[in-house]
Length: 472
Image (cartoon, rainbow, N blue to C red):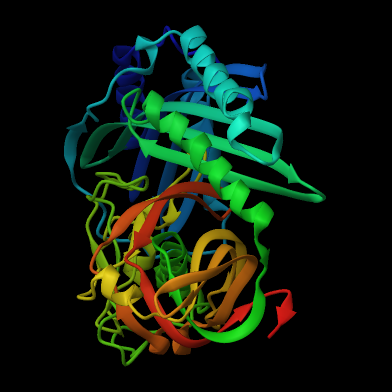
């Protein structure tokens, strides 16, 4: 762990000036500097015991250099060694045989401060006490209201605050990002049945982001879901009409559409959505958007290449409309970056990533979609996979409610949906008019993790296979 609490912003700015001046002297075609100072606090509660309280501070810088179409990268936590690091990076880059085309670099100057309540305004002891109280209430106080036993209740809580600086020959941007993340992992037992469920709340913000009531709600929702899983039957495998809730719809948008619309996959030739104007579905009610400018877990103002974030309409009325791009992939398709180049930290190279990805709401009222509905209402995500090169997907579904003429007649678990996105969207017959983009996720790509949001309206999909453990 590298302690940086005494490293003031004026010291950071001094080093930025020194690094920039040294890079200016090297006759490069382009360079950029990403310096980050971060602080993370983690709390782990296991039943009524404190397992871990951890603080971690880090300061580092990542530098990209571009010369004669060769792109190099280096990073360090020892800022005073910047000259040695840069010289070594230049020598290594000169030896590269691979060339990279890049142009239309960002030119922005801005200072972004996210309005939030400082994590330090509440002592860590008080935070720990709150989680112990909440867990005790759920495990012991509410025991009489349950007919099952909670075997284990684990709370994981994390606070993150990062100050980020981006500098290139024409840009100077500083922006901060606070995140609050809470998990509840519970295992319950009823008779001989044991189930485990994970519930979470992730917000961009400080102490105000997840209130005491929000923390209680994470656990109370988890016990409710756990109870349903313990009494539900395994879902049958059947062809049926289905309704997808906002969480599953968000997963469909992110995995099945978002990844194939990342332009670096287009450059590599590994996406099924091969060109703009391609008809993805004849269903003109299907519009899918990636938007870092709205309120969500994946929001940001500037990406990690200094490009201003913007809304990108990926699918418009069923047709492939646009791709998310960074500078390199935008150069490949002869466009300018739309601000989708993101890196997990200063020590990672920016790559094309999603932000808040969702289906746009339609004209159908939720109550009308459910009226006289017969089929399965699918809720919650339980793992899955996608293959962007051919468009296939498979998602596990946590809960399934069987409807008959608008009324719930059965509850099930262990369901799944699968198909090819090129045909699956044709089966969507109704699109709800309420869009929920409160989903939060941690997307993995290129050995990096990006914080993302997702969601959408509820969708009715007709005549598709619901996977299960029994055939019906």
